Image (cartoon, rainbow over the protein chains, first blue to last red):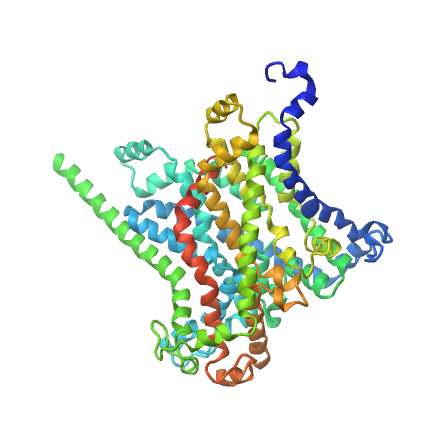
Length: 309
Length: 310
């Protein structure tokens, strides 16, 4: 490749980069311990775990835990909830930041644009614990703001316990997800839009394109590659549903619709110490996500020559 | 002809103006939605707890008091929790910045033998992982469960942060490195003397990401630290206080707010648990709210550089 590289041989080239390898050593060790060792720990899903024996020496039990959860009615409920929540979030939460970025770009006053952007990032920087606390108060049946407003408009209205009723759970989850992430997720689109050549807009204006025309024919086509990449990336979270949010907003009375894979794994695994069973479910989830990301990446690459790898 | 064209132009100007008006109205709405919940809590946290129970306090405190904050800071483990959180944020941010920068710099080396394999080794962890339980068992096996280190070590590297840094480093002109090499500088000197001083924007960005992540993480404290209240970070303390409250609401369900207040372990003569919780929320979000707007110009730039390449 480089001058004389071939004759000097591989070892010389490696030796030349010894400092670079040294820089990588902490990362490699960390990834091996904190990412790859847990992958090895997935073996638990085919073992009967004895802590004293360690993972490898614990006895094999074949697919016992997989059979267990596949014949467990609760599991299908949880899987269904997870798919529903993720699908709704993708449907609403994926296009919303694109639209928001486009609208931000249409603001002509720089000062106002900056203020809107700064404030829209605010919810992203607080934790879900804080967001859940805010929401619990706003939606509280005891003098919460939303119920107060309803009472003001209709004094006969009964206060509603929004967080305790299953039918309100998905709307609350979708709306709070939007509130928390729309500003932050739009940053990358705003950046992509700011890279568009301004001459294109001027040319369109001379051709008589209105505001909508400019957005439709210039802005959106220009950010298509960014949209494609983010779509693939969002696929890796296909069964995530948003652990923090769901876990903090669910109540015993809403579990029927609110229990998702991640919260179920936590309860079975850590709270009830059924390590192998919970690992099997977790592994099922990881494998599905992997298959989905790889196939979506493949499809998008075929269609648009954009891909993650 | 000229007149007609002018009219058409005028009409379009009108259209754009109406559009602008709607846009402003919508964006003002967005600002209110993002800001108001925090303002509401700020107001309530400065309002007398028992007065708040009558309702009707929205935009300004009715009976101003500092009691909620006095009670919050008198809460048994709160100062300790903040000390844990601050130590955690500082250590994790520092360690993470150093090692992520080294890793990102190494990954800019295009001719490195084995580069593709190393890249894949890191990247693969973003699309497949062992998950919660195997990680939990790992922490138990390396004896960091119930220690300070379980709050710091698992969050040191993030592939996303590495990519943000790597992309930034790649923008630095190769010629700077080349001329330093001709002068006999080693990789470490180039890294410290050339790369780092030019990378303040991306360093600030990643420091913000890591720092806020460490400050906000309540999960590790809740599940990896179980029998040691002394090591519980502030975010987890808030979680415990709120979880206790929602448990109470569920058990009572009917009955007045005042009754609920009386049964709560946080109730005191000076204030109600609800107002105390609001003071807690404000205390915990204040540092973050004060810091991120000042770093905005950096993280927008940092993310921007990354977005060019996708």
